[in-house]
Image 1 (cartoon, one colour):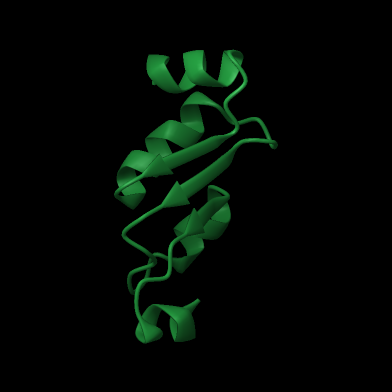
Image 2: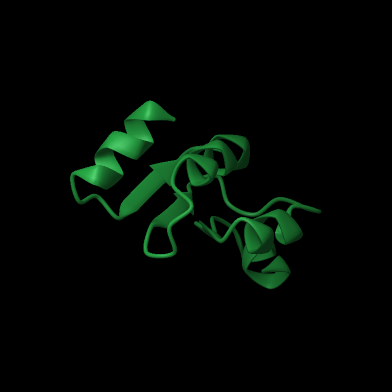
Length: 69
């Protein structure tokens, strides 16, 4: 969390995380609307609402994820 906050303070607006739980923690550290938070692992079944709720951007890594999203 301190790293996210410091990066945001220095002008970073794009943040990339491997998994959704990491991204949610990162988003809570910098809730500003102009920060983009990406999740590399994509959107798994029954996580769609978490992406919307926390304003996360999935990397869609399969046709199944594209259809789900």
